[in-house]
Length: 270
Image (cartoon, rainbow, N blue to C red):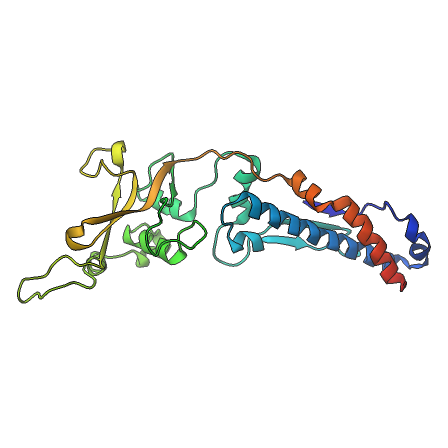
């Protein structure tokens, strides 16, 4: 969304405006535009909080303002990618504004590349998240995603060294093993874990009774089986974000007029 200068509602400050030099006036205009841009930013963040379930701080902080200057009398407010990690928030939010499908996450690209994630499917967290996997905002923790991708050797050429070897998988599976190897009395552990993929009724196999996705088996004889990451048909989103509604909530035109009068008086020393 852009905020540009609209010289309306300035009748009450015509005298002060006339007393300002060109640079002073343009400086006051730029400040008023920026005031309005940050007002719209607040409205946009409120919109995200209202329409999304547990919106992440990353998405809220991504709404940035490119400020107006005396030379460029317009400001832009939009979600902006920042940092070296995380998804581009514009890509995340595009389907929420216009509807349609979302782009694959990087983890989905990796799992699809090695043939684990079927065509036409994306991933979703189970209704009851796997213990230790959830970041509290309905997403998997970054470190947990890395472990899954490593476990299934889904890192590409540049990250292949991070792919988990069989020895490491065995260590993970036998973590906190109970018993004595010498006495040949080692029992299945209680804290170790083995991840596996089920395709449910999409394919034949012994795990057809489980829904498609990545599952974890742990406990004695691996009897404790829980879903970790489900495979779901690529969803089609309905539009949820409305920029016109955001602008109306910010009352941008009236707010800009008010801030113009304030900034002109301020520049004039009134």
